[in-house]
Image 1 (cartoon, rainbow, N blue to C red):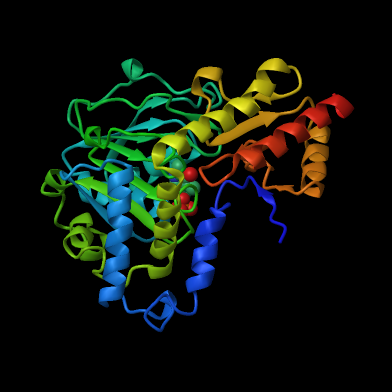
Image 2 (cartoon, helix red, strand yellow):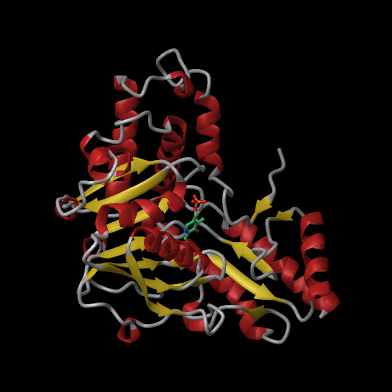
Length: 360
Ligand SMILES: *Cc1c(COP(=O)(O)O)cnc(C)c1O
C-alpha cells in the first residue's frame, strides 16, 4: 500500500488506524450488521454516539455547563443557525473578520438581523489577527463571533480571548482539538469535522446550556440548537457513519496519549516548515505575519507564479498532494492537521529544501 502525503485543506488525511478500524468493521461492526445499516434508534448506535461524545468531552475538557451536539450542514449551516437562534431584533451581532469564513458568517448574520464588523484584518490582506483591545463591540451585542483559525489565509489566534462583554462564539472548524481550549470562556463553539476531526457530513456544536434558554423561539424546530440538544442529536436521523468515524479518530487521539502529544507534534510540524521561511525569507515568503502564523494551514508564495506551478507539479510527482493554495489567494498551502504525520511534514520540508537548492 502506498499512501500519499496529503496536505489538503479538507476533506483531508485521516489517521490510518481510524481508517483501518472502519475497514475491519465496515461489514459487521460487532452486531451482525454494518454501522451503515444500523438504526440511529438502536442501543448499538446510542452507545457508539455516547462514546464519541464522552471522548470529545474528556479530550477537550468540556465542562458540564456545556452540551455537545452533532449536527449536519457543515460550518456554513452554523453561519445561519447561530443568528437565527441568538440574534434578536433589538440587538446586533459583532463579527471579528479574519478571513473568508468569518466574512461568510457575517454575511449570513446580516440576512437575519443587525450585524457589524467588530474588527477586520481585510485591509492588511488578512495577514494578522486584530488584538481584542482594538475591537469595537456594540453595547447591546447579542454575541461576538470569532474564527480561531483561518483555513484559507493561514492565520490563527495565538491566544484566544477570555469572556467578554457579550457571549463569545467561535468557529473552530480548522483547529478544534489541535490545542487546549478553555471551553468555559465560550458560549458556543462549532466545527465542521472534515478538517481536524473526521470526514465531511457532521458538525459538532458545544453550547452553554444556560445560553440556550435565551435563544429565540420563533425559529423552525429543526434549526434550533435546543431541539438537537434535548433530543440527544437524534431529533432527526444523524449522519451515523460520519459520527462513527469521528469516534474512530478520537480513539486514535486517546491511543496517542491524549491531546498533549498531539499538541507537541503540531508544534514540531509547524516549526519545521516555518523554520524554512525564517532561514530563506526571500524564497519562501509566508503570507501570515509571524505572530499570527497558523499551526494548521501554512500558506506561502515563491518568488514567481511560474515557480509555484513548478513546485506544485514536482511535489505531486513526489507523492506530496493538496498543496495548491485556495483559489482566492493562490500560492501554496500545506495543511498540517492532527492526522498529518511528522513523517509527511519531514518529506515536505526535504522537498522544499531540495527545490530551493535546485531552483532558488
Ligand atoms: C471549511 C470551513 C468552513 C466551511 O465548512 P463547510 O463544512 O464547507 O460548510 C467554515 N469555517 C472554517 C474555519 C472552515 O475552515
